Image (cartoon, rainbow, N blue to C red):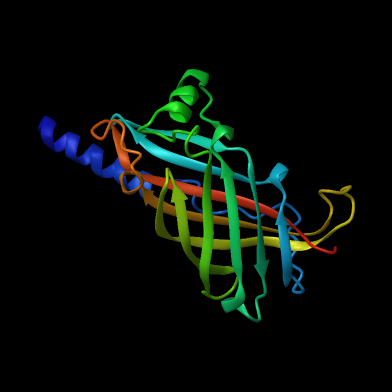
Length: 214
């Protein structure tokens, strides 16, 4: 196979991997709780919630990182999905790519996250469309690097129910979701190394929430 053909094939595989990474399918939690009485308003538990991202690096591999400080609220009612909503805030300074020097560049760089000027990433939903079972599409707006763009998350309910053995603030009636999407970083002005880093970024949000009043 000629070199150019091999390079094109490799780039195609890489693009597919970024668009649909291997962790996109959510595994079931151990001893999964599936209480039908899941409706309510929830506070995001920041100790059991994270936002992961994966980006193509140098045309040869994938590189991942995580935001470890996520806060917010959401409401969920399977009987009235049109009323479901989410409001999530991510602290840019909580970024961790497991290499401190790279983290520093990503946080401070004007063409990266520029945390000094834009300390938060924000998502606010506009509507939720149930797709049967425990799945649905969550539409909303992402504000990143001072730019707001629409996004659609594929949402899967992992489980819900009363968890009595955990002390507060973690215990109570809990629910958990995985939400995935892809964004184009160039749309948000995060445009460093346009030839060396993929423009498409895969995003995975793992959320655990405590129902208010539980």
